[in-house]
Amino acid sequence: DTAVSQTPKYLVTQMGNDKSIKCEQNLGHDTMYWYKQDSKKFLKIMFSYNNKELIINETVPNRFSPKSPDKAHLNLHINSLELGDSAVYFCASSQGQGAGNTIYFGEGSWLTVV
Amino acid sequence: AQSVTQLGSHVSVSEGALVLLRCNYSSSVPPYLFWYVQYPNQGLQLLLKYTTGATLVKGINGFEAEFKKSETSFHLTKPSAHMSDAAEYFCAVSHNDMRFGAGTRLTVKP
Image 1 (cartoon, rainbow over the protein chains, first blue to last red):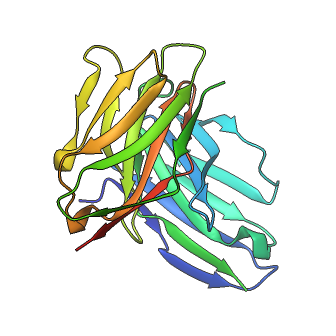
Image 2 (cartoon, rainbow over the protein chains, first blue to last red; image 1 turned 90 degrees about the vertical axis):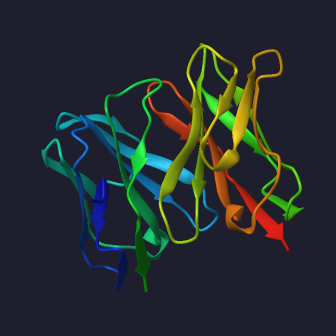
């Protein structure tokens, strides 16, 4: 059973479109995250939720909106896609927030904007 | 603020040779340090982590790392590289959230 699963794995879409990436974790964790990995493999946190509440919201364009219907799910919706949004988006989870918590990653969603 | 710096974006070793991937951290409080591995087209997997206690930490796949406070380092080593070790390796530091280094790509030559 996949611990952190995200769909779709690959997504090719045109500029200006709106798309969503879904994420679910079956680990019983309280905290979930979205990370963005650029073409140079650099990983940057975008959002963090703890028990459905937004904890971390890095400097991310308003076009990106996370939604957590329950603590096992954290979806990412992106409006008006731009070329620069092309990246790999990783969903992740941890037991709690804060220092020392191991983060478990999903397999990633490869987004290509053309 | 916490951060990590990985020295060397690319390391190449021969199969059977020692693997040494370097990571230095900056932290105003005792750090929690991690190494993750990312195989092509996959997510990140935890290799090992240091929280408190023993400074030499053993992880999966024969990797280990030593926390050296005096050198602010947490280098990752493996005595003998296998072809299957070829991947991207990330060092990370955790406080309020987890911050990753830029990654080191390990290539293993036959």
